Image 1: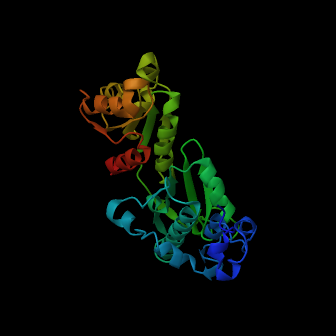
Image 2: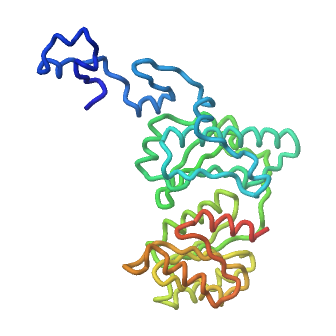
Image 3: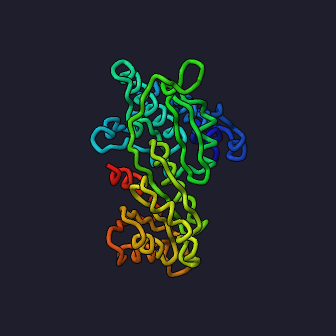
Length: 308
């Protein structure tokens, strides 16, 4: 039953003299929909609306780890799955504000900014969720961009641009000179591969993509050997589902660390990526490490740490 309809017994004794038949036509003043309340960042209690600041609302459900990049080498990312559009909006804006403050501090000293520290990423964001985030309005401290294949919502902090909206030229970005190859066995592995590739590129790492090169057509990965063995490459990420054999093949062809990312692609007993995971864990090629199923983001961060 909608919130704005109530039986006479719920409305009070003064209505008890009316019949039960009449009661279903008695209405109360409609309440604002809960989603609207989320978008306006206000709390609803009956018909009373209590205004709260964004920081007050954020502190009720999130305790952001802004110093993680200093400890772990990569900033906190937002796992979007299960979060409301309002929560995602508030978290990303707070993260953008923190990056702005970090850039301002750097510009007042040596002007050197760690590229990875500017990465503001929310993963597992469906298009429908992104549309709802947009409905809330633009961020105050950054500009959002949606990457549909990877299901990543990234934010570019305002302080990275000048007053005209152009990229600032007075900042220097520190990053590794090594690059990463992201390979995937099939086209259906693209979402996971793109999650990894975008996480790397948004962190200032040069990425080379080698897609649809699975072992069913072994000549394809052999054709890509010049890219895999380029002297600038410091790590190779390999995404594969089904039998998960590609990382072992790549591991036997390159002299850099290989990060294997099993995907949930496959039929029947592939068990949502478990069979690929077990194959990769049992790889006979030394130097192959494995992350969780479909964890492109985790694989990308591991690769960045390998480059250090």
